[in-house]
Length: 257
Image (cartoon, rainbow, N blue to C red; front, top):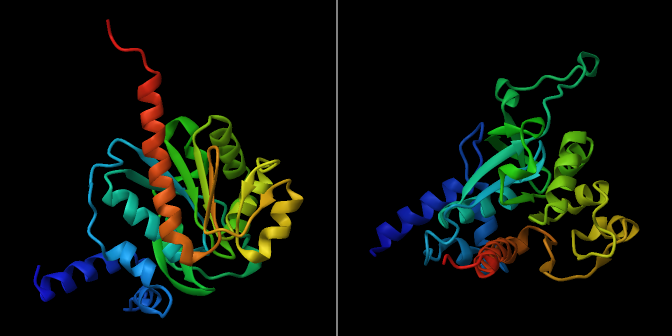
């Protein structure tokens, strides 16, 4: 592959990792080229070995305004690159009361706002709403972080019920950065080993979790990570869990006679 072709391929990936901005720009490019983030850059720009690894899998991304851009679009890009179908599930439509005096762009009706470390950067279209989905619809659910997003989600009763139902079903529930506080609200963390962003770890302990400081933690059907820099480990762990689960199902199905 020529240097020009490689640059074009990397630009295409960067565009998939970037939400729809109101002004031109690719702030995620600065994140991937920042000193210390070499592992993240390698994860996104190394060609995918098996584009059918997650073929047939359907994954829900549950997110609201204020989600951390790379924590959603990074895993979404990876899972789709492996052949999975990924849908963005937004919170139940609940506009702010008129007395709040808020002015929002027209696209806010069917998009959610992305941030990069508290700086709004763009918008992502919602495929479905939390009151329109059920656990049987997907093989896995993951929740990105962002300081605002989890607070918006944990206030939505449909989101909380959905996470509870998904967890009880034995399917995969994954959360990164601030997102585990949604799992705390859903009351599913008692006795579970997990991690999360440093300033929510007390909340996770109070919810009954066993918090550790590791890039990614897998405990049964729960996967958690700490912050945006862990997005590669997080994405790889989710994909591996889904592949291993498929193998377990195949091993337990009796052969036709």
